[in-house]
Amino acid sequence: MEAPQHLAPHTRTESHLQDDEKLDVQHVEGTKASDVESQPASEDRVYDAAFQRRTILKIDLRLLIILGLCYSVCLIDRSNLGAARTLGMNVALRLGIGERFSIALLAFFPPYILMELPSMLVLAKLGARIWISCIVVSFGAVTLGMGYVKNWQQLVVLRVLLGATEAGFFPAAAFLISTWYTRREMQTRLAIFYLTSIGLAGLAYVMGYGILTLGGTHGIPSWRWLFIIYGAATIGLGLIAFIVLIDVPEQSKFLTEEQKAFVIDRVNRDRGDAVADKITVASLSKPLKDWKIWSYAFLFLTATTPSYALSYFLPVILNGQGYDVKMSLSLSCPPYICAAIFTLISATLSDRQQNRARYMLINSLVTFVGLMIVAYAPKAGVKYFGAFLIISGGQANGPAFLSYGQAQVRMHSKRSITSVLMVSFGGVGGILASVTYREADYPTYDVGLWFTAALQLVAIVIILFLDRHLKKLNKKADEDPQFLIENYPGFRYSR
Image 1 (spheres, rainbow, N blue to C red):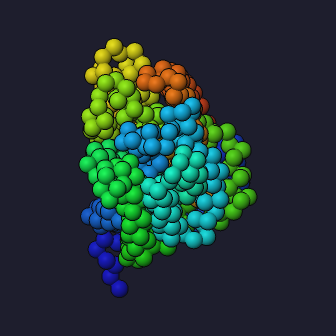
Image 2 (cartoon, rainbow, N blue to C red; image 1 turned 45 degrees about the vertical axis):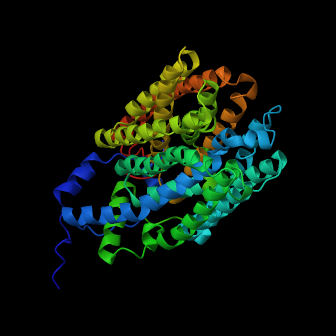
Image 3 (cartoon, helix red, strand yellow; image 1 turned 90 degrees about the vertical axis):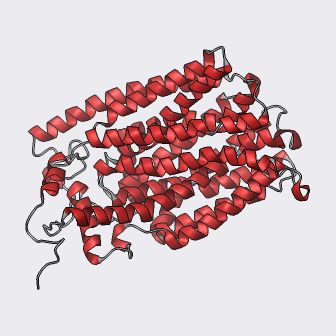
C-alpha cells in the first residue's frame, strides 16, 4: 500500500533535521550512560510541512483557547476583591478595620498551596479533561457564593474554599501544554495561554465599570453583582471545557492516527517522554532532591508577587492617587492589555532565538524599574506608567520562568512535580503580596513596593547563576558521552 503523501517512512525532512540540530535538551547531572531511562524509539517517519502546520494549528485551537479562557476566569475570581472593594464591599463588610482586607486576601493561599500535589494525583486518575472542568465549575460556584456573604468572616471562609478549588488548575494546565509541544515551542504556547488570560483579566476591570451601573438592581449592590456574574460565567465555561478540552496526546481522540503519531514522534525526538510514566507519590517526591527545580520555583515566585500585588491593589492605588471609582476601574485595564502584547513578543523572541535567560533578565529589570517609578514618582500619571512596566515585566516572566523550569526536566512525573512546586511558590508570592502591601501603608504601599523590587534583584542573581551552571553541565555532557543529563542521551539544558 502506498504511504499517504504527508507520511514517508525512513527519510528525514529538512525541517526535522533543523529540529534535531537545534534541539536543546536536559538531564540529571552525573548520570552515567548505563543508568539511562529511555522509551522505545519510534519509527523514523517524515511528515510534510503542510501536514505539520495543520496538525499543530489544530492542537493550538483546541487546547490553548479553552485553557486561556478558563485561566482568565481563574485569575478574575481570585483577584476581583480589589475591584469589589472599590465598588463598595469595603464599607458593606467593614474590611477597612485593622487588616481584615489583607486577611481575606491571605486566606486564599494556604489551601491553594497545600492542595497542589493532591490535585495532580487526582489528575493522573481522572485525566485532564474531566479534572480541569470539575475544578473550573467548583471555583465558579464558590465565587457565586461570595455575592451572598453577610460579613467579612464568611468572605474569609469562601476565600479558603476558593483557594482549595483553584489549586489544581494552573499546574494541570501547564503540565497538559508541556505534553503536547516540544521545548522550543513551549514558551510561546504558554505565552498565548497567558495572553488570553491576562487580556481578559484586564478587561474584567472594564466589566467592573459596567457592573457599577447595576448597583441597586433587584436591591443588590454592584459589588455583589460582580461576584454573581463572574461566578455564573465561570460555571458555564467549566461545562464548556468538559466538552471541548483534550487530554494528553496518547489519549486524544480528535486527531487522526497519523496526526497522533506525528505528535508523539516529535515529542520523543525532543525529550523521549511522549508516553507517560506512572505518576505516584514516590515518583513525584523523588525529583524534589534536585535543587535546581527549587530555584525554578523561586523564580516563579518573583514573577507572581508583583502580578498579585497589582491585581489586588492597582484600583486601590489609583483611587488613593485621586482618581474616582469609575476612573480607577477603567485605568486598571490598559496595563494588562499592554502586558499581554509585551508577553507574546518576549516569548516569541525567546523561543525563536532559543535564549531564555536574556529575556528573563530583561523582564525582571522592567519590573524593577516600574516598581521604583510607582514608589517614587511625584505625579499620579507617572506612577500609572510605572504600573504598565510592573505588570508587563511580571506577567511576561510568568510563562518565561514556567517554560524554563519545564524545559529542564524529563518524564511526566518530574514535569508534574516541577509544575506543582513552581505554582506552589507562586502561591507563596500571593501570600507575600497580601502581607507586604499593608493597609497601614495605604495609599503608597512603600514597604510592599520595595520588597517586590528586592525580589527582582534576587531573580537577576539566580538567573545569571543558573545560566552559567547549566552551560557548564551542557559542556561536560558534550565532552563526556558517559555524562547524561536527565538520564537521556543528547539531552541538554535549555538556556
